[in-house]
Image (cartoon, rainbow, N blue to C red; front, side, top):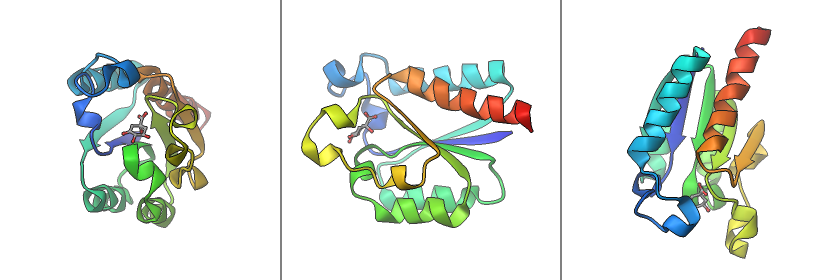
Length: 145
Ligand code: DQA
């Protein structure tokens, strides 16, 4: 089972960026965490990060026919991007939304998530563990198949 992990703007800055919200671990550590768990769970993974909405949309479109699942942390685009929602709907790949923090418990402008309109599940406020839960979702799905 091939999984594409997509991280949106400023996720590459974790470890430096607002550590009281996002923790002290770096983006490199997040990528290592995801890869290690994919080996353990028997999932093939590619990880993509971009600060550009169009590149995120391109990566979703290019996933069509190649990936069985998407794990996406759209970062600030969560709250603004109908285009990312439309791209996910277009490719119709099972998608899990992840957030390191819990946007519901932050500023009011973070309460809306367009991607949640499509995502099968949302894991938020659990740091790296949210990515693990998303990977486990796909690993369980693989076993059921
Ligand atoms: C985030 C939450 C978003 O509101 C924010 O814009 C981010 C990161 C998270 O992982 O907690 O950049 O998606």
